[in-house]
Length: 89
Image (cartoon, rainbow, N blue to C red; front, top):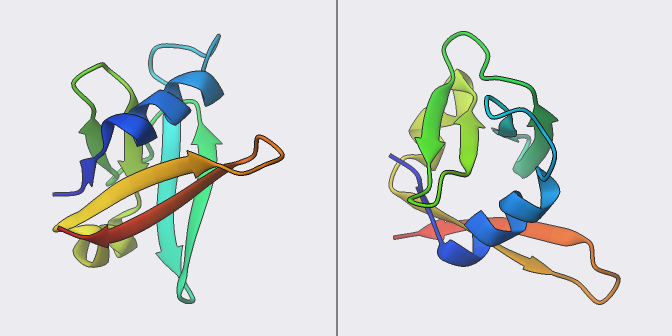
């Protein structure tokens, strides 16, 4: 299962401030790129990953195999834009 760093959880917390408790970020790995979108709730078949502090990401079923045994990390660029990346454990 995908793991999430505490830094990624913090970035997600900031992005999702004010959203419903069921909301999270949806991850889809396609065409060699990680696509990150906001979602009100997981879609049918999504794998739900919850950080210890409660932040949630939803992994699209077609991306679950690729993202298994990976770690989601994040940083903020100079403009304050969040940048997400996955790496091997």
